[in-house]
Length: 432
Image 1 (cartoon, rainbow, N blue to C red):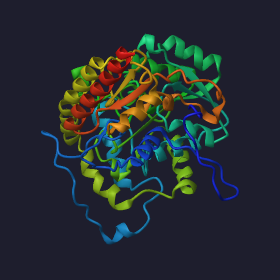
Image 2 (spheres, rainbow, N blue to C red):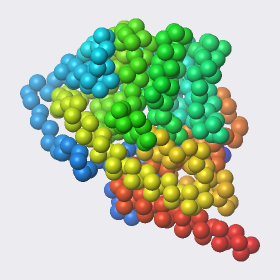
Image 3 (cartoon, rainbow, N blue to C red):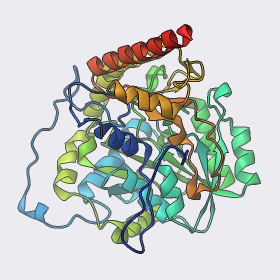
């Protein structure tokens, strides 16, 4: 992250350290200084990390009321209410493990209070190991990989000229050559939209098994699939290729945040071998103490397999249109895409061909919020735990991430304003 452009205020109380915002939170706070607020009709929030949450044609009705029973006044178990844990396990079995002898059970599931907490609990359970992670990837990984000092995080660079692909042979070299005991990655990738699926994903799971290296798959965008095999029903998960749920070193993270479009519920899960889930549950006993009991219980019907398929089909239809609007619009503005997103609801765009200063992600962000359009500068995704690479300009400095998570009208208007912003700078450049 470019500290010349981002000032982190020093704490005024003794003993505290300066803690940076994650990329999305930073850009939201900067936009708020100019009058942005959630739901403001004049703003196009193409920086948001959540999907639109209203009704979609063909999707199950949205939950608008939650019953709270007397028992719900009590703490939830740290690992989650047993009924929800069992429902999550059964959904994975129905979607991905038909015909397989080894099945997930409630003991293979830990319920957590949000995606970041799922990640925090999981990495807090890691030992003194080398943990591989990819560049670019989810902004919140940076502080997460720095705060727990037992493990050492090892960056692995993805190349835009190769569409951010990473073949199994190179993966094996990284694991063996760097002595990795675990690898963390988002799949589909945030921000690149790269999706590992089908035979490629099967090979990754096989590599984890053969190399005895745990793969932590962040699958929060796994139902946002573009151009996937129809047999996958628009969903991808490494769970499809696990042989034995209790011995294969594969850990999955997902929840209602993105794939069910209920981010405000803060209800997520970790799925993996029972021994891992025991550790993840134990970390919850000192990190957070357990999740929201009424919402956990009320979420169980959302895991009905037919309801999940209907929601996913509705997502494919609505978000597929917005994806096309954004891809075509950003290209028309002069941006270059290393890869059309294969998953997620993000477009990762290279601004290098835009007129200065818009060819810099941070400068583009600052110019765009003046037009009431929000995006996330690419350098936030250059994960650098502990700032061990401080002093160097980010290799993603000319990039920005644009979200087509908002409603279609805001996506279309945001793209229109971006095109006008770029055109105005091209006109100014031509007059010089």
